[in-house]
Length: 255
Image (cartoon, rainbow, N blue to C red; front, side):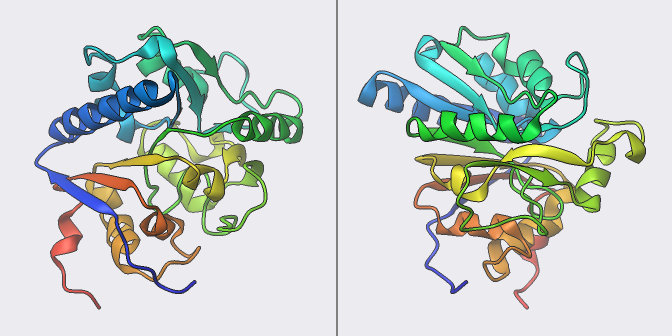
């Protein structure tokens, strides 16, 4: 893919808490702006430890018109039982959805037919615009579960079933989401890259030294599916929030 002039905004903070507070303020304002413009906001949320500080601050933010917000989420494992705490939908309920008075919540639930659920969620996303996407970046540059082997910048679908890259599965253990690699599911339902980029405003939250190589690649490598997160540089309104650890390799000269 040819290079484009990036409008990406990069903000670096001294700590994860500072990152979370600043990102939450900006996300709250974006939600308020969407509700003021058209009386509602559709918001997609990622579920990961990298999002914890921001969602905690957002849940505590005064004045957010949650009663006008329709919440969606980004990806979900296939094969976990309904009550499994490792499910991303369950994580979002604990950290945000059960803490604020949302108008509606629509989580991905693969059940016994992941392909059918992907098709259902595709239709949900297609039913209207998405105002805000709150996402992260994986150690291999994945956004949602669009790992390098399956990421497609021109994907015709908005949601699909994917096989997870080994590096992505290892990250789930490193993040203490699973005790052992063999416990991490091998497939998931995910929003596609075009689905994420349909969001009017993107807020990308990336703390931690483990993410530093991916952030360096996101900002400096050619735009390609080798590092799926590089596509964020093509979005007209995307802000990336880093702590000092995640930004540590940006001081190195470009190769």
